[in-house]
Length: 497
Image 1 (cartoon, one colour):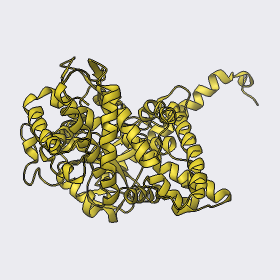
Image 2 (cartoon, helix red, strand yellow):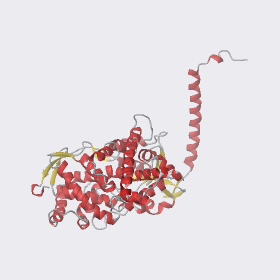
Image 3 (cartoon, helix red, strand yellow):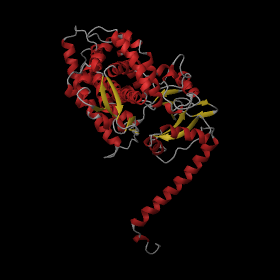
Image 4 (cartoon, one colour):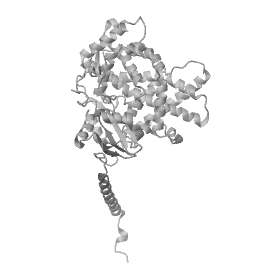
């Protein structure tokens, strides 16, 4: 016998009831799971909210200009140099301190592999290239690193230095000298990006450089966002911008491949041309996939060129304005080099080796304002560190913010002091803007050269002062002055180009 009225229960009341039951069971399951985890010897910490984890807390600390606070607060709270959290949609352990860095960079590879968050892969990489032979993050990044290392040999870097010098002079003549004041952030990005296009891809068409450059602000904002691909989100916008850039590069690569195959005997110095010569003619689907793989590697180079190197250069310009005594010492060193050159003679490898104080100033700039926050790994085998078990499948994050401003490694850490890098320099694995060990950034030397070449030209032609002395630093996700670092220029007239 049916209960009176049961056939007339509205779905409006039924669905909330089902949802309530589902939530109740989920909550009970969560409590059981949490109790089970608590019995395991995992690192202390909290994974925060479902899906978003502690990403918002990290983003808020970063937005306030204190990304190291997220790390330091948890180190203090849990009284541990490692703690667990959840960032960018994945559960992970954050490693802190020089000893943790040493473990990761030298002995941890047997239990770890490189890992890219979804937000990076889905915005910068053609998905079909990762599906080829089930290529994982480790295989992709290994090939990308090999591609970059092969293109940045000592011989190639020596060839690049005069071109860097020539382009720096042209850039200053066109974009700095005509103005009494400029915004450093945008100009350094344009210079670094244009340099990469010229040296790596042999792109000389300014319109093509502009088409590649314009979507990059949207791309880099979304590559470290929560990977929610809904209209209007930073991730969704980055996916569209990334595809636009990749397709532009792919069209250019196809064109270059045809040109090179018609004139195979010409000597090509740029990275792309040599990679295409190694591939040969090719045909069919395999040819298209090979070209898309090259696009992936070029994207990695351009992303690095767009923000990390330009960030290093921007903050060096910033600190040289704030510390006149450091500027004077850099100027003295660079003027000695300039005076040793003949009329029209460009910089060379030997000149770069003489820029020791300038590089120490740059290192101190990167310590205080790192060009990148760190990197990620994936655990391939359970292992123990500091008495805690790190399970297979978890993600791991190492961060510059755990050491760069720690008074244990850098006394009076907020002080700008290039002398920290004299002699043997800081404690090993405490200064890690380029990572360390076998997976150290393959573009480190290239970045060093382009920064020093630009600074040589800048300081020998200008003094400058900040228009906004206390300009706020924001993170997008890279550190950047909120107003673009506007400076007032004072040319050294006797050294004008």
